[in-house]
Image (cartoon, rainbow, N blue to C red; front, side, top):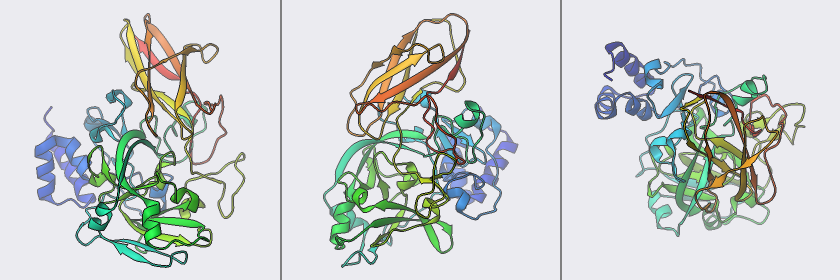
Length: 417
């Protein structure tokens, strides 16, 4: 469908607000239309949302994406056109193609000059502070594995839709997650080059995207997690060079931990003998509520590991024909492989077991499916996943102000016509 002139003008306003010049705008528009322009803009989350974007201190109002674009995009474009939520119904196999992989930034996506880029490793818990070039990183022994990556606020909208308690932040439904193949250098190898000391306590990852002119986005790791062999400094995604929107030239990839710890456009690593407290482990990325007593200097429970979840690969709400259907979805856990996914049509009073359709590898999510032959009517399908350690989705989860880690079984509305 041709983009109306008013739509082109609106896209141009969005592009300018993201720092795109007219030449890049016209090239993107010609090559791929509205989708290419918004993807090239480097969409970031709503500056009024909870999470790191809320901490930027920016008061800039940005142009929302046109309504006609939202209906045809491979993404759900949130709020101001900067957070891209994936549509799980587009995903068929285990690996999520980059074109369908959700985007959640803390500022605009960066164009990094790889020739001048350096990774600095410093702090009072290293004996040999160093700076590494991109070539240095690529020359080190690397690893490749499959891992899902999920925003801590994925399913946040369900606090409102399911429990009637709206949390602050971008109202993600089920698409703030993807499953990729990642290639990179173990972080522990880099820390050892810098001479990490035995009394190191915390490792602070700092991106080049800024929350303020003085500092980039940052998250803290325990030294134990930083030294895990599968905590990566990733430079590859799905067999290709890491894309710009996903952190080129280098990002952290920490299997099973919330998305914000997987810092993009990594520029500095600070290793400390003392615990490190920043805005992103005291007030942001913290579960604040009656069920979550404060930890250290945090206002509640700091989000680190993910939780077991499942979701159907259907639009929300969905509309299907009254015919035999093969319904599929995805489930994942930070604690190991998914062993069982069940589905229910009666609000969880009875459950049937779904089939697993693909082998689950490494830190991958699991794909499940089941046969359904519905008659016309209104239905609600629920799914519930259990992992090898016996962790299963709980019937209820306490409310937290910022809507992190919602993992109750989702009542997915479906109309059959």
